[in-house]
Image (cartoon, rainbow, N blue to C red; front, side, top):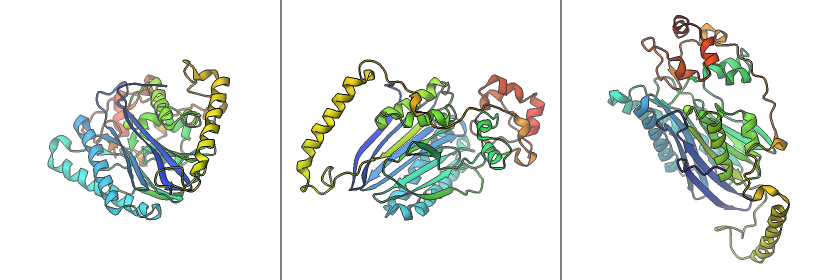
Length: 383
Ligand code: MG
């Protein structure tokens, strides 16, 4: 497992104090291998029995991107905390208010400082409480995934040109993953655009794992690779490290940020954790601990990977999703109705005065070639 000193870490584990389970939480952010600054940011907040976490991916110049993601998470957290999240059922509206407040604040700051004009950020935020309900909000192309009973699903919808094309049946998800316009967003906080966040509630089940990520992760490795790592029998911290490492191994061309939450799959005795009602049943802990120790010893004695040897980061026996097709039809697949969106993941405000730089939006030289001449490129951005 990686132990890079330049990864910003946040770990949190423990009990929410009820008998249905515990949450283990971990987060990582890394500047990547190609960028000089990290404009990603994560929020990991536990207050009482409520957990709030989020990922924001800023854009709009070196100063703008960092400022936008910082303001977004600060304002988002302040609004949500002020409400004390009575329960996740009510949290959806609170999360939306947090996003709207952050949006207004970013725009106000940008309007007052020419150096920050045009900055924006994605934001995906998740709230869970002691009950069975969670809620999330999403703007942009950071993502929320859920791993449940070995199956990975994406709960958030990208606000991007290629996501629209997939929804319209113009291209497949596999084509979207390598599409030359995959970095172009249709919605972001702080950008002068009507904000219509995705906001949904969902039911939490024991054993669920939730992953929030910036596109520096899911733009670099496939959902299948994400699923392989999430199903590995490692701690949440180790899986966070492995996700970041996999994104760096794949090229690390963007800042990469992950927040991972896992709800215990086993019901937890009320006396087993702080705040869980001490006293009754505590005598069960010692035999259970001894049993756990025996199980661990048995694993160590039979599984060679627990020595100095590194565990396989991609356990083949946990392959999940079929994600094999790699066919790209290129930029000509974008209908005229979708051309000329105003902002790009890496070059905010793609207006007519800004010359596109193929290297900024296309990592693959072959795909860059498929864009054609500069004249053709320019024509694709006209509204
Ligand atoms: Mg990014």
